[in-house]
Structures are given as structure tokens and as C-alpha cells.
Image (cartoon, rainbow, N blue to C red):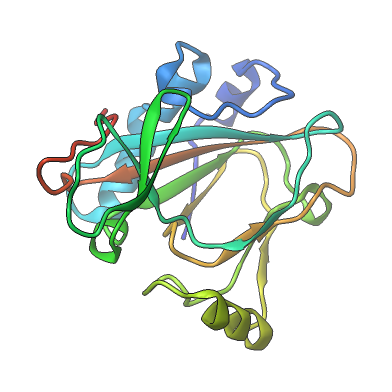
Length: 205
């Protein structure tokens, strides 16, 4: 699904960044302000059918100084206020002072991601590639291999101000950049559902 910001000129006010920001919501940067603006929340709420809140945000920046390849995967983790044992949550890790866990399918299906493209993202700038229709369930390594071998990938080249609305569960990847410049994407995850007790989202903004 696609949307677009109303005032694209507002993106020009965002500061240059040659490095990713793992936890935008913990900063006081202009990127946090954009992540929490009513426009993005409105898109998320329309998709989810209820009032949505932001639970995670990252700035993905690719440039000559910071470039990487992301292989095919599904996003299966959530960040929480504190590690507490709960059915279906596993593979606990701690990064930057935040607890993360692999969540069960029922929880992951309540989350959507909005990717706001700050810069042009043509085919040579490492845009997102997805395997259509793969967001309905979790796939093990064998199933992933089968799917990427049989279903043509869709390359999502976009313009500044475009918002890609996606399920984090869809199989996706991103290649290294083949052109110059900088490619910034503000990734914000929304939900309208609380985590099962005793867990709480790290952020509920």
C-alpha cells in the first residue's frame, strides 16, 4: 500500500545523516517529531481500523560511508519495557539497553510498518524488494528458499515523500547501493494492540 506526505517540503528541514539511528524514539531529533506526526499515525490508524500508536522507529541511512546488504528475511522481533517470560516469546536479546524478543505470529500480525522515504530511492539506491503474498505466516529457511525461487520479487523504487505501508512479516531484502548520494528511510512500526501480560511495549506513543 502507498501513501504520500502532504507537505514534501517539510522533508527538506530534516538534518543530513550519514549513519543509521537504531532507536529514533529515544532521541530528541527532528526524525522523532516526524515519526510521531499525526499524518503518519492517521495512515496507520486507517490501515489497522483503530487508533494506532508507534512502538518502534529507526532511520535507515545508506551512503558511501554506510552501506550494507540485507538478505531475505521477515521481521519477527518486538522491543519491550522489560524482559518477562510469556508464552511464545523467545530468543531474547538486549541491544542499546532495550530488551528484544522474537514474538508469536498472533502478535506480529497486529503490527504494520510505515517507511517514509526522505530521499529519492531508485532501483540503484538499494530499495526494498519484497516477495508478494508472503506476509500471512512465518516461514522457515526451507520455505523461504522455495518462495524466493518461485515468486518474482517486486522492487519498490520510490520518490521523496512516498510512504510504503507494509507488514513486517513480508519477505523482504535490500541490496547495496550502486549509485552515489544518500538514501534515508524513516521506518516506524505501529500497532493498536497491547502485548500479552506481563509484557509491555517499550514505547506506546
